[in-house]
Image (tube, rainbow, N blue to C red; front, side, top):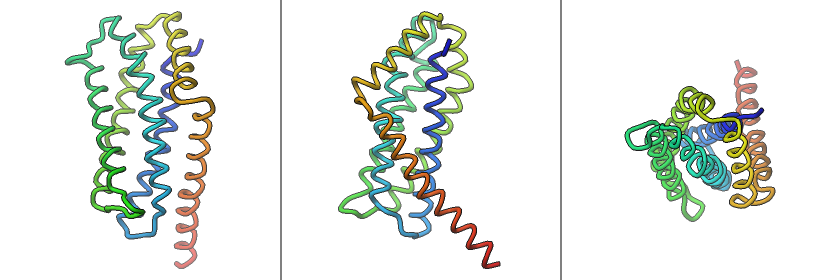
Length: 194
């Protein structure tokens, strides 16, 4: 039987790809290379909707309360740490969003927020994958796992919206092609010049 943690780990893989993309974007801004503001806005939208509203929503509304019932502490415990990191991530997403106005990027603010967000989320994902999710697998019954998965699916349909999950994956794939292909082309041209 599939476990709730497997669904969340799969989403972590998607979020890690998004972090690689936002890292590419802030590096381009840092280097003074042309960066499409629309791509950055799309990435911020992705982080807000997929990473925060969908993924963190599943954890905050369903997983963490289920763990608390089994005795895992919120205040002063691992759930409280995860919630604080979610809160900090939201602040950094807002800072990234606020760094863009009238199709112009406030470079310093964007780079600071984006780099901090990437560092925070990578560490957060590592903690959840390594410590929190194995705890879930040990403590939650098969029936609770099934209930969580059903709740996750319901959140995707009712809160995020029908088909939005797929649209977000399409957006991520489009940006991956654009940014990873750009790097491949740049690296190839560098090798050719030598």
